[in-house]
Structure formats: structure tokens, C-alpha cells
Image (tube, rainbow, N blue to C red):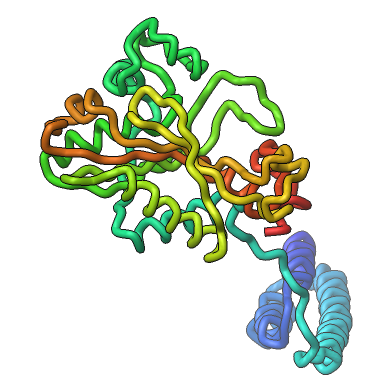
Length: 341
């Protein structure tokens, strides 16, 4: 009997510590100190106990009841204090005070530039056409008029895979063949954005991976003047209406004739400075009329169709537009740089 009373005491005290509000405290009292509780019932049933044991058991049961009553009073007081403290804290809370500002995420400067490029070309009637980054040697070089052992291949240091003839594309130009074959013989106006890879030394001006946006327009009676007008319009939308441009003769295996487009230096307004190497001009992209061999490989007839193509680096355009002096900043994850844009 004494052991069962001790068990009642231990259980009751343990459950009392778990009460957290007035309701749970009321339920605890009803369970352990009400007239129907095991402890009170044991006091009422003393008549069933052997006469010689009644004094000891009765005394022990009353002691336990006193202990539980005292513990109940202390727990009630503690809960009242806790509730009062919580109410005081709420009363002291001024919800009209400004909250703590949180750091907000933002788009990477390269992504911002890409989206601006997409918007400009979409407004000019071009669609986005995406192609694969793992490409075949044939599509990356041969079908673009760069046959095996051709000196022009020295322009690109290529990442090769373990599968013969499969590489990481060195430019987005293979997308031209994909786009032409998907649309020939219908006219097309597409831009081909994506990541490119070249095994180059990492410097302030070059990275082993970079974004590129290729452009392609195929139709009838498309001329070099259309190319110049279209790209000049792009430059003015990208850099401002007063932007001046110029075209210089160049060479790319997949275009003929080929050119590079420059814009007037933003820092010196064409006077010549360190950034533009005293020329007054900054190169932003390469371009040209699509080579007849490339047209044929894409499924078009060179005698009926003509077109132009261009390729630009969004990181380079961002560097020119915002005065960024090192392309490595784009991949450095330095918040001091990224938070400026």
C-alpha cells in the first residue's frame, strides 16, 4: 500500500511539471486531488486496511496529499507569474515601430544583361532558340565551314569528352545549323543564347566558360545593309540613342563577308583613353553574311536565300556598359560586387 501511494506521488509531481496553462492545471487537480482521485479514494478506503496498518498508511497518505496541495499552489503561482510577464511584454510591444530589414535577393548582373538582350531582340521580331551545350565536332566545326586541320580551328581551344567526336561547344554557332534544319526553307529570325566553353587561360578578359548570344536571320534579299541597320538599332537600344557605331572588316569561317562592330567609347566619348586603348572605340560583337556553304549545310539554297549572323558576349557588353574591368568578377560570388547591380 505504501509503495502504491509513493507511485501516485511520483506520477502526480511529474505530470504537474508538464502543465502549461490554467486548463491543464485544472485537469491535473481533477485527476490527482479531487474526491475521485486515487489518493483520496485510498483515504476513504482505510477501513479496508488491517487495523494495525491504518495509522501509518493514513499518515503517509495525508502527507502525500499535503505535498501535492503545496506543489499545486506553487505551480499555480508560477503560471500566474508567467502569464503576467507575457502580458507585460505584449503591452510593451509597439507594433508601429519599423521592422528589421532583410537582405533581398537580386538577379545576377549577367542575367540582367541577358534579359535586356532578349527583350531587345524580341521587340525586333527574333525568337529564342536554344540548343545543346554538348555538341559534335561536325556541328561545332565542319558544318560551319571549319574542316578538320583547318587553321581556323586554332582560334578555339576545345574541351573534348571521352566520347570521340563529342565536345563542349566552343561557341553558340552550332545552333545555327540546328535552327536552319528545323525551319528550312522558311525564313527565320532567331537568337541562340547559351553557355560556351574554351580551354583558355583565365584572365581579366577571358574565362573557360562564358555566355554567348548568337543571332541568325535567313530569308530572301537580305543584304549587308540590313545587318548594319539591325545591329546599329540594337546598340542604340542597349547603350542609348546617341550611341555611334562602326564596322570593321574581319574574318570568320562561317560568314562572308565578315565584320566586327564597335561602339564609341562611353568613358572618353571617342577621344581616346586607357579603356579603349586610345582608339575611341570598343568592340562589342562579330558579324557577317552567312557563308553559302553554311546555308547549304542548314538546308537552304544559296542561290535563293541569304542571311546574316552575329555573336556577342553578354558579360563583355555588361563590362562596357557598367565599367567593369575584370570578367572574373562575374564568377567570383563577391557580394560587394554583385550588390552594386
